[in-house]
Image 1: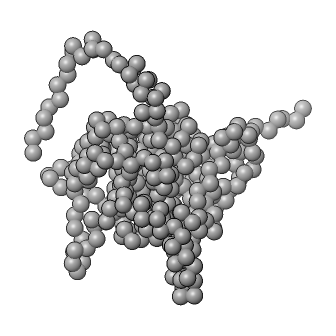
Image 2 (image 1 turned 90 degrees about the vertical axis):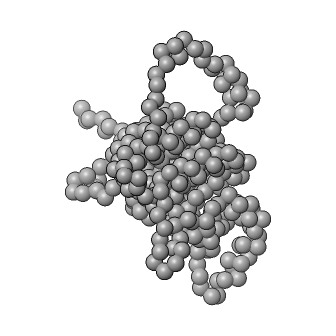
Image 3 (image 1 turned 90 degrees about the horizontal axis):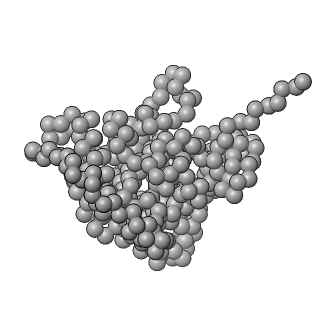
Length: 319
């Protein structure tokens, strides 16, 4: 396949730029950043501004999918059209986990015989909303078609899906991109990943949709294990993070105290939290380099946002 060579038009420097129309649309509510469930992340990140893409990364089993599904639930309740492509779980598994988020309880994940009536009751009470949500969730195309027959998922298939979905949806989530095959068509994987993220950026800009890609982080070695997460920790070629608009890294850890500033400006010293969201990079917000504190409880799958983690205050030296 021959890729066309881009041409540079010198005359385009003199063309009119129409910020007036852009500002007018924003003032009329036609083009605004879609809200996440968390006011601080929405304010400092502006990750869901129309026309931008976001990578949400983190180590395995740290809660990335629940984090992304929580965004999907907020988007759905805001009336913004969306689509979700799960590449690890079945659509049925997604529905069960979404029911956890709707009810604010882990109960739908249990499978004991004696607690089955509780799960059925939760489903009956929330069936209408869950049915509406599941109309936006595709079946996992990676499910085996026969015995041990796991199909390949080429990167162009995914970008074609995002382009097609952008005709009807404004937020499009792919979870996770580790399932995508980047070793096809005679390209090296880093070349394919660069072309993949370039295409997604072009689709986002052209259609004003917001693709969200879930990714894993690389396994850390030695002294790097305790260092703060950054874009280089995201698995894949450097092009993925350098060419994407926003990069967020979710870290799970034991409860630890930090100085945290809430969204209302209140500073709380020694505030315990068990999740940290590292804002590795954002294109349209001021949050690059910030860390946000969250809690994920034992009894609920809800991510509670606590605020911005601040550097420890320096203790005054005694005279």
